[in-house]
Amino acid sequence: MGERGPAPTPTNILHMRGSRIQGRRGVEPVPPSETPPCPDWLDGEARAEWPRLVEALAGMGLLASTDGAAMVGYCEAWGEYADAVATCKKRGKYGRPTPDARVYQYPWVHVKNAARAELLKYAAQFGMTPSARARIQLQEPEAED
Image 1 (cartoon, rainbow, N blue to C red):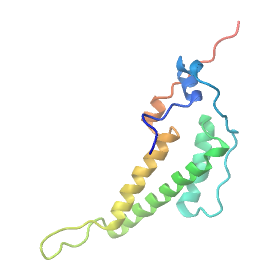
Image 2: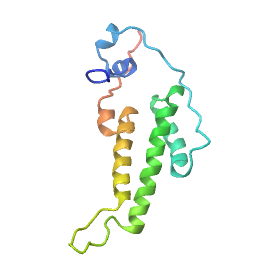
Image 3: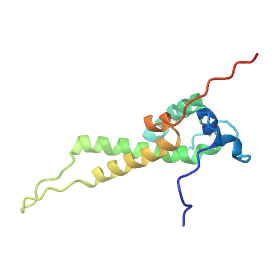
Image 4: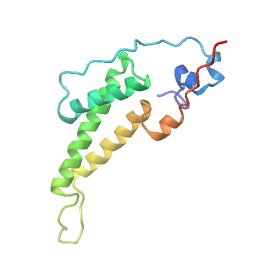
C-alpha cells in the first residue's frame, strides 16, 4: 500500500519558493547534477525527445543523474503519443458504422489518450507544465553588504 497524503515537496523547490518549512527538514540526499545518458535502445521519437528534454531540464536546474529512468518513461510516452497521433491522422479515429448504426473508436485513440495522460504525469514531476512551474517561485538572491 502506498504512503498517505501528497508527496512531499523537495527541499530545493521549497528553497526556490522561499518557504519557511525548508529549515525544519532534515538533510536530504543530493544526487549529482549530471545529465543521465540516453539509453541505446530508445528509438524514433523517444530518442529525438531525449536531447530536448535534457537541455530544458538542465537549463532549469532540475536534472540529476538519477532522473534517467523517469526521463525514459517520459520519452517513451512521448514516442507512443507521437506514433498514435500519426496513426489517427492517417487512418482516422472512428470505424465504419456497424449494421445497427453503432460507431466505434479505433484502439489507437485509446493508446493516444493513455500516452497523453502519462506524459502529463511525468511532465508535472519535472516541472514542465504551467501549473507545476507556477508552484515554483524563484527567490531573488540576497544582496551582500
